[in-house]
Length: 308
Length: 270
Image (cartoon, rainbow over all chains, first blue to last red; front, side, top):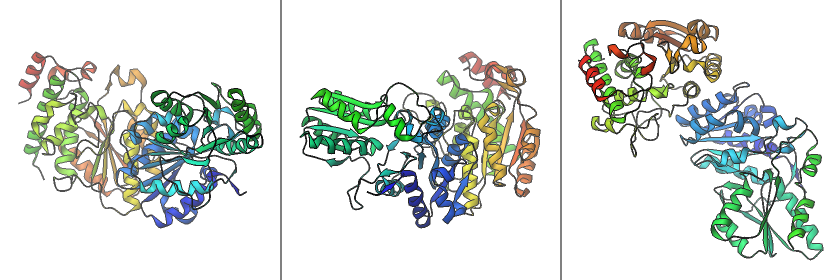
């Protein structure tokens, strides 16, 4: 199976996009080699600006560039894009509904060894709370390509959550991608896992293992966390004994909360969550971190068995 | 080009409308609107090319009111330009109005950036100026920054970037009226010397009397000749300028006049 970090795919997609779309301008805050926005600079240097270690100013500049017609891709780590610059994103980009695509990398615990100061566990909650903000987390390289191109075509602000380390490709190149539409990766079961990001791959592993025991999981990838594909959530909740929401994010405010909101209002369904408890992370390898913080296929399997 | 007499007439109408708007709304910011009235009038009636024909265009001369609480000033000037119906001004800060407490760019043609949370507008102005450089657009970006606002760290991030990118198409004006909500800026958190600070950040700095049209026009003209640097016009202003009992009073930063006070103010603004 192919493996690539979504940030790597972002850099490659952006390098293609910037060459074919003259409205694209890219900003970074001294992390362009890590976020991979540098790939765009390598091909169109005049439309890539490194604003230095000043994330707030980067978001303000992004708003100004967008206000006069540019499509802006602004990158830094998820921690700083949504934390340091939150109120600028909220007021200068969200409230204005300007065409700024915040492509934030190194999201979640699996940023790894840099530790809790750099691990965003609440970025989805912050971005989901901004009215009109579209929130997307591509699951793999194939999806990242589609996302980066699709958001150039839509008007308004988008938060794209990208990861640091290489992940398995789960989509085929010709699969049907649409912003706001979930992707059913495993079907025909009576238990459903609603997952996003790296928990999609973990859910697929869990599904394969449980299949051997005669337990059939549906696995749905919600690349778009907002607006959530509510119809799909309801459709699968109705045909499931119970559902599990799984994400590399705090259990407060991310996909789990979004799914719970839809279920509570439309079709109350037994539900559990595989996500980060109310805690900060710590240094460690991505694998050690997802094991310690309960974000693996085994954690999904344990929850499934608990409710069977 | 408007004559000095015409500009004075516009400024008088603007100040009268600001009093009426804030009195009707029972809230709003008069002090910082009056300190910058000559600055805004001089920009909109002589310096910038903004007309009914191009006001809907994204790419033209633009003005970013970084000190967004001076929204009564901006709306009154846009009404004086004919972009907002005069009668609409009295909807300011009321439910369903386009004229929000702090300006929203998506509601009103001629509001070139949504602002209000201090420190953000100058960065947006930098982005606009950067775009005009990138795309070889001949227009200019203007931004009005508050002296108290310069206590925000983001102003200095923007200042650094504007000089770094050699944005000589950016002309900012600093409303140095010396007062903020809680009092004298030098006592709350001293941002002075602002001229020296912007010079140190790589800006061309011009000191003017912010109520003297001739000095403002000379500064705008000088800014157009500067190459490779943004310009900061540090304008010494009087908060509440034009109404005797409001001048240099921090208390008039964001308080509405009573109907009697409004009447007294309007009697002075003739």
